[in-house]
Image (tube, rainbow, N blue to C red):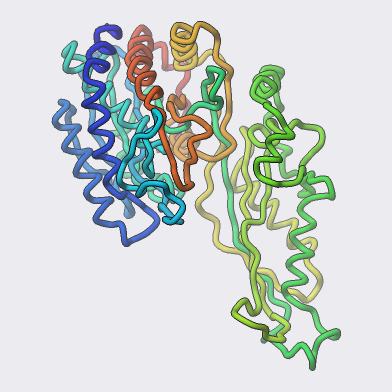
Length: 470
C-alpha cells in the first residue's frame, strides 16, 4: 500500500511543489497584527485543500487567538487514531534587506526552495497533508485514523493551545501524535527527533527607590537598581556556567547511556561550533556541548533594561530595573516548580530593602520524550532503516515544541517528530530554505510510516496512554 501511495505522490511531485510555493506566498506571520490578512488567507488555503482531499469535519478550532485548522478521516475501525500536527504560522521576515530574494516570493536556487516558512515548517507540514490525500486518492482509505491539527500560534509559544484542547477535548482524543515540526538533527546522519526541552519564563522588576535620582546629587550614597539587578542575575550561575539555583534540577530524569551515546554521535566539532558564532565556551564542564544544548536544563537572561537608553546621556540613577528570564527544562522537571525555584533564589539573594516583583505564571511547557518501546518509535526506526540502510540516531531538540508536552499532559499521548527540515536551513533568519531533496524524501517516507503504524492495532497503543484530568 505505501509503495503505491509513494508512487502516486512522486508522480505528482511537481504539483506538490507548486502547491507548496503557493502556500509560501501567503504571509502567515502570527506575531504581527499587520499580517492578519495573510493568516486568514492561509487558513482559507488549508481548509479548502483538506476538503478537496476528502477529509471530514474540516473546521477552525478557536481558543481566543489564531485558530487551528482541523480535519479528520476516521474510516479505519480498530486501527490507531493519530493526530498529525503541523503549524501554518511563520516568523517575521525581518531584516528584509538581508534576503537575496523576497521572503514571500518563493525562489529555487541550487536545489533549494527559499522563502520564509519553507523549512519551518510549511514544507514538512504539506508533505504530511498531501500524504493523507494520496492514501485517499490511491487506495480509498488510510491505514490509520487521522486527525489533522495545524496550529496558528507555534511561533508565539502556543498561547491558545490549552484552551483549544479544553474546548475540543473529545474531538482531539487519539492514541498518539506525529509532528511534522521538529526536523532532522544532522545533514549527514539519519536521525529521529524523539523529544524536546520544556520551558518556563518570568519577568523580574527590581525597585531600589521611589524615583530616579540625579547621579551628581545622589551617586555614591544610594543603590542603583540596574547595578542590583545585574548582581542578582549573576548569582544564577557560577563562573563556569553551572546553575546555582537550589534543587532546580533535582527532579530531572537522569541521563541514560543511550542518551549520552546518541549525543556523542551528533556532537560534531566543538571548536567549529564556537567559531561559527564567535561565542565563548561556557556551561557545566561535566557535560559535552551537545549534551548541554539538548539534554540538560538551562537558565538564561534574555533581556535586561532600565534607566535611560535614548540618544546622548542622562545622568540618572535608575530606581527600577527589569529582566526577562527563561529556563529550558528536561524530562521530569515540573515547569511551575522550576519557575518557583528561580523566584525563591532571586528573593533569597536580593539585598534587604530592595523590592522584587514577578510577572504572573503562564506560558510554561513541560519537556517531552518518546519512551523506549513506543509503537511510534518502533515504526519510525524501521522506516528510517529501510530507507537509509542503517539505524537512526535518536535526537532531542534543544528548543521547545509546546504541543508535545501539552498534548501528553492534557490528552495523555506521546509525540514522534517526523519533520524533514535540516539544521542548516536558516530558520528564523533571512534566506530560510528547504531542500528539494527533502521534499522527495518526505513523500517517500510518510506513506511508509503511516503504513507501518497501521500494522499495530489501537489496542496495542492503549498501554502507552497516560491518565489525564478532564
